[in-house]
Amino acid sequence: MIETLIEYPNGGKIDVYALVDKTASDFKNVLACCEFFAKQGAHTVIYPRFSETIGNPLYHQIFASLEGTQYWGKCPDFTVNGVWYEHEGYDTTKDLTDPKTKSNTYCNMLGRGIKQSSRVIVEDCNVRRFYAKRVIYNRIHFENQNITEVYIRAADGLELLYKKEEG
Image (cartoon, rainbow, N blue to C red):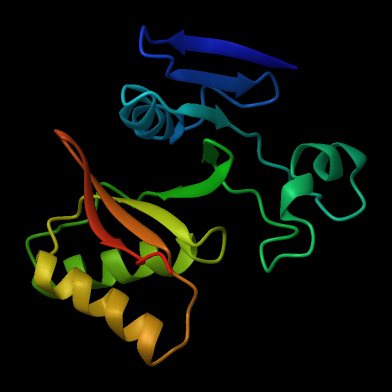
């Protein structure tokens, strides 16, 4: 049911459920996110998507740790040491030379992502980092949205934009 794709000498590992569609358009991006964490020694697991969740015994088994949370019935993309993360991409045919398009693209990815998990990784759409951080701040403080971590996946890896302080 689960196979190991990659193991690193430091103990980092990427596992994937057999039900995961490895030909899906976002699989390579999700895998790249998992590689980032696994190279640091983390155990990552990529999860399948289900169109029918509630009432599906397989969903109940695989996503059991989400039961009782606001994410029950959702299918986040992967876990890092047992913690759920969601990756969000965008239509790469969009013309991102317009600043308004960049900001809308970023806001849409973030909005879709936080419906799946409080930890979100969005694709780099060349949005200004100050603006991206301000959007996160506003969503937390004025819209009361549950956001724990936000990364941007850039060409050279993941860039941490926000991490909620422990305590």
